[in-house]
Length: 317
Image (cartoon, rainbow, N blue to C red; front, side, top):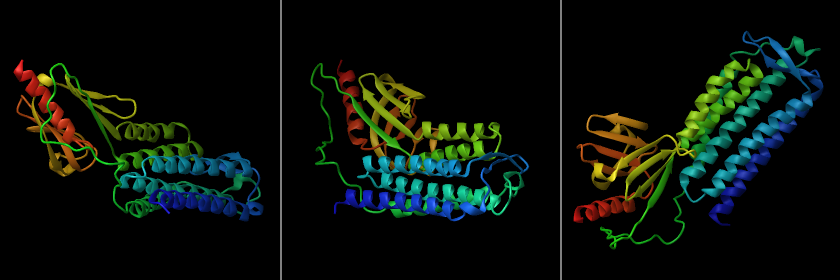
């Protein structure tokens, strides 16, 4: 069995097992909860809305399957990279505990009551569920963070210098993503979704916005061309930072940890700026102002060579 086949088999089996457990767990207590059952609790923990028992089961299963299938597809597309496999493991672990906890809390609150209005109070009990889900996500990350990155094919040979022919134009593109930001963003969006169930809708706006912000800045794409460098965040390619070629003195590659450049995200320090979504190899642009601009990006060697080639071409004019 190939590595990809094993990865897909284990991930798919986990989705099936959790789906079966959620279904059987709900059906086991079907005769001990009212129909409809309490499905929404107010600010002070009192039940204030209801839902058909079958509808609630469908709601939980649909939420779980949307997240789980999305995670498996993401992992299948990026299975060669260990970070992608680890991200899938983290999402599957956290989401399984999260949805199981929501289902268990709802059943417990409605257990052995005659009508949904008599359901037990739910308030702070959601917090331990989130904490355990976070821990499960960490275990899933560790379980998926195994094995080496597998090359997509024979790597192109790279020299120390890149020479452009007269009139030749070239563009270099590379990208980087942060599995941590993606996992956090996805989890916060889940929290927002649950807030719609257990809280007035206004309480979901803040976590929903925070989750989408995390997802929007969880990746970056770097483009090098004859005009300079452009770094754009997220799938929406915005916000973006443009550095003109005339502002660049040279480029190189260095290995940096986030703490060495001031932390994660967009950082500004005396003498340097950085866009750090992961530690490791970085494209470093030496600016004419004397500052260094660090960009954590995959395979930065060619990018540095192309920048230097453009600078050499400009100097020859």
